[in-house]
Image 1 (spheres, one colour):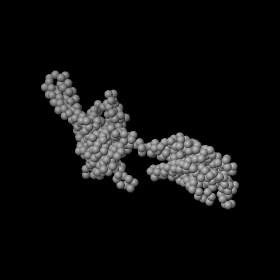
Image 2 (image 1 turned 135 degrees about the vertical axis):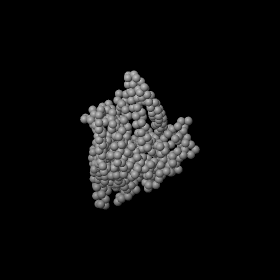
Image 3 (image 1 turned 45 degrees about the vertical axis):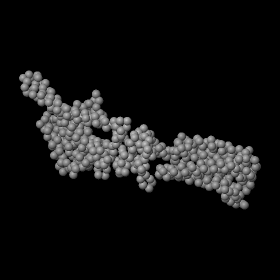
Image 4 (image 1 turned 90 degrees about the horizontal axis):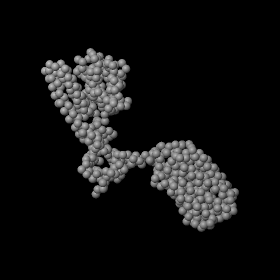
Length: 593
């Protein structure tokens, strides 16, 4: 019996120690108030601290009436712990939308009120008696329905909270694992104490170990909150991202099961879906008839293992590597680019498909209109301007009026400039449609050919290239770049001296075109820097734009130095792909060997 008496003394000491540690933890956690779950956790610890304090103090009360009142208040405080702990777990793990923590407050308040008034009601406990076992005064009693409900509520809500925290451990990997696992583990010892008390386990049924078993609970919580900074990393953000990443995106997203049935979709997809006999359809058309979900998903960028997009339509534009599908609804034609990804379970087995629909109807219509306009303008421009130039030349040859001949020469010159602009646009457009075709090139041959047509208009054009270098690039696009830069120098500098230098070093092809003129005006370069022309800022021709577009398609960069003459430096990767912020062409790049 002396052992039981000593044990009862330690129960009092342990209960008060648990209360002191809990309130110290509350004081520390006040700095985190406002963070997800912190407020609920502080409230949980306050209720826990009150329970431990009342449990320790009540062990010194022997008068039956006063002890019954103390016992009732003790368990009334404990009635708050489970529901508040569940409210914490819901908010901390980002699940407050499932069951708001505030819904637990009235339930806990009612239960606590009924338990606290146990001395004047008969629904909580019965057969209450004081059983002194030594220095500490213990009691024994049996539970009535409300007492059993309070027990079930506390243990049930605490169990759900632990399950939520364990799910966080399993779902979110190492980022929150240590903190959530520690808090979940901390609930084990108090649960054991409650079970021992409820089922009369232990050396003496009158000894309640619940409060003292909060000591390891407090130590584990202190590790989670103080040692590892639980509220410095919070899974609420991650869960919110998981929940809203698809819902908030403005692009329709469908989730299909292995039988191609739509099982989920986001808000953006809702206007596109209709009810069909076999489930939702996309604007009245079966999704499985639009997209081959059994085909292997296309890798990022739409390039298959053979370097080409297996699903893209023939002649697809850059950026159209995903599957293009067409849907007709109410007589209207809608076009979508569809990208697919496989949904896998934790074992890696395919359990469905995610389809992302990008509505490109307006873009496709705009491209079609531009294609028609470009074709008509280029065709008509070339034919009509050729006729204009020919007639202007004829007038100049046959007229004896010097003033009329000068006007005819101006017309002829302007017409030929327009023809030249059209030819540049046509040449670049053809290269753009074909996509960059990389091959090992002889630099000197390409550069010499690029400047050949401009030698008569310049004082001197020097070409210098690494003799041993054979970089991989598109020779036609490289020729277009150099030719336009040299032409720009020859046309704007009288008796220009131009140098073209090409070097290859560290996987980079560098081409510098320099002239001894006054420098390209800022007004010509401003639109290139801005990426667009305005009424106030626009280039006088298309040559520099063709240079920029060609370099962009090769994934390179261009810089202009106009301090002393003009030096244009073009940097291109040796082979497909960009570097240092280059903008590689999204279309598949072919490599000729």
